[in-house]
Length: 544
Image (cartoon, rainbow, N blue to C red):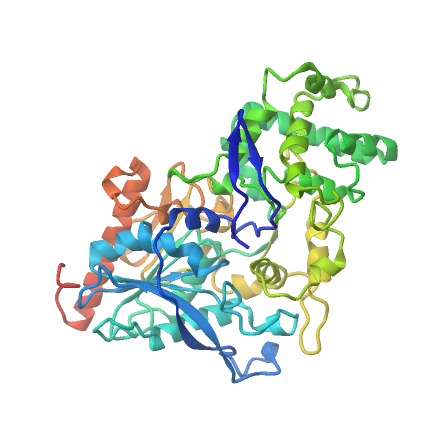
């Protein structure tokens, strides 16, 4: 589910192989999967399905368990070293292997003689509690149940071949997660951390700790940091598209869709969503976006190739003449680069469908209720359920001012998917709109716990629901104690949890990434010294 289509570079454009519906915050897992070449043995723990037998939202309760998968690497471990628990998030555990091999967990294991373990989230990968995912069966997919898994795991995990007692509180457990898993890391520390808690410390990278219904800010970093000739063209074209929609002129709207080869999309929202795919959202998209740009060699070029096409100065006349096709609706003025934009969609998006009808669920049609109601276990269904019930964050257009996506894309467009996907069950139903308080009760922008680090990227599309959000208070570190108990770092120029990627040679990394990793190493070393002081022991691991 989390593998994106292969990108082929051909004459300055990206040709994408096959359509795949990928949840917006899970898609970066594919980049990590391409980095990893190491195989790790799968282990399972009998995890409790229902940690809260007294909370009515989980009625009828169950005492059953499910097999939750985990993978570990003890190649750096020495007695006395910490355990680094990587929270799997909204993808399979295999998609995170690179973090043990060359990424942040490898970096921290090597620096501290630690052991690294990836825990696959409930309802992802092969860690599904049930054979299907009906509305009733999904009722145990909540934030509080998921972080309770983490607390149970650190008390009961076993590591075959490792001659040490590593369950909490016998060893210091340090969590790491990025994006949704970063939020779960933060919430786990807040709930189960502290000097007498089960979890000693944690790093939330691009931790999306704030729930909102509409998330217009997703596109702000693209507006600000992407090539501005591309952005200016897109803003103007989208504004003109919305003007045509506003006329209600069916012939004009049909003609406009036909320029993109999308006249078969009778739903205006489906058309708006399809031409937004190169930018991302709302939520599902088959190609890589701004979010999938990373600092290493494996970052996607899709976004740059899209903008290169939109701003092509040497397009042939049959393409540039398309700029005038709708000028009668804009006072005779051409739509600059409309032909380039439409040509990109026709040449490098439509072929993704591999001959399937444009208006079908196999291509760009989003109106098939039967498709959405399919109860087969999948990452996309699990992610959508969490979106619909707790997180929100519907990617929508701003009602006023410049926008990179059409104003046809509003909350109601995404909400339909929720209503179609999760009809009322015998025991459970989804709320009319997400219960945002189920996440925001942990603190939102200001979630805090002893030894919880927040690290974010300045150009991340999810920044504004993270600790360093533009809507949050200014962040300052004012003391050495702050640096240990409440460490925080905003990486200049970085994107979505860029610190999670590594090349197994910190000294060879780009400057800001290298120093972010050095900061994380120092932070963890301070935490381990505090652990040892509390336990009355010296050092951590035989190499400390």
